[in-house]
Image (cartoon, rainbow, N blue to C red):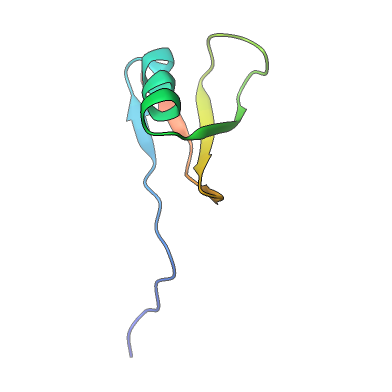
Length: 62
């Protein structure tokens, strides 16, 4: 008996959140769904999605 896996999503820790968000949004085409602080440039995590599929959050590495 095996485990049925229907999907997987990585949890990514990054050193530079603004640069990482710009790369995922502008280069790879992801949409920022939500962040830890709305309407601020600096935040601790971000939830992204592409083609209707949400990713796990990106977390800022301090």
